[in-house]
Image (cartoon, rainbow, N blue to C red; front, side):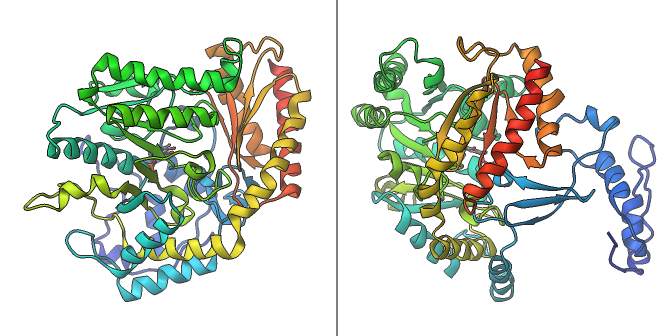
Length: 494
Ligand SMILES: Cc1ncc(COP(=O)(O)O)c(C=O)c1O
């Protein structure tokens, strides 16, 4: 990898190399020096610099004292390449985002064109054409009751925004005590204080307490772990939905503003729900005037086999959260869809919603989102998922002959494989065993075998797959072969 020649840069910056930090230690900025001098640099220099200066998200840094980071340098189609020249299948679409696949020239062209036309304007009192066009285009795919869009730069901000709209809406409607949010166990909704409060993963929250008060957890729809206790998935779904009613009554209906749910819950491993669950949720929300928020941060834009999973499962949300694949991950953008009812009180007199983000509805992100939707339509990506999802499932189900595979579940192009110690009894791994299996082996073994995916134990241990929506049966077979090889080896280590 060669740095661009920019000889005069250091001189211009007053030779600001290796500056002393406040503690008096010398900061080593050798990569910047090489960049400034036009000297070549490669993996070795990037490794050292990354270890010295980058703070990786949701990542343990201790292993980097003895081993290298994986530095991804290129993406094309459903493949990624790293700085050591390895090529792997992107089995997670980056992070459930690159649904149209990597490296679309037309997305780059749309960004460049927009940069030269209108590079930036916030959506603060001034609108711009791409945001207006995108809002209508998005609504054309969405459940028909949704009519208004509040843009953000990602999923967590939209989660946060929905809660703030709900709180202010009820204040404007003369119900100021309706502030609480009910959400599901193990569900992930983001990292800001509000979104984290709604998140149902205790271990992620403990060190940030006190969080925003007034959130309540109810059971999720983990059918694999519930099937001994119920006659059918439908009965279980009704039971789980009724826990929401119970929580509302316990807290007091006058205090509950919203219920958040992912149509397919990611964290814990692709928990789907019987349609009776969502039907009952709608009834409960209507009965107690609680806002039904569908978090489609992951499931939106074709992942489930419909443009939005709400349509696939007959959910009728009052608000819907999307992000990630709205631009196929190529620009940061999120969108909260709302029924007009929740906007109406904000149209009167001097009332405003005092909330927003500098870069929400960035013109470049909106232009890219529009171009991304052109790709969706032209390449019929959602049809591809609908047609091939049953084949994907069948291919993954071949893995049931491995004793470590307890459950294959999910929908569309979004599947989890739950790992167990005993297929018959469904016995799971202890925390220590899971630690050894996932962090000690699986994540790096998958990568070394040519697959970027996620082995996760926020709930019980699962391997998660969410590849670009462009792939088909040939690639499913490749994935199955890699999974088979690595999981066979994993079982030997149990
Ligand atoms: C369901 C759900 N909601 C919210 C978020 C947060 O999105 P972001 O990281 O864009 O803030 C995520 C992220 O993965 C998610 O999966």
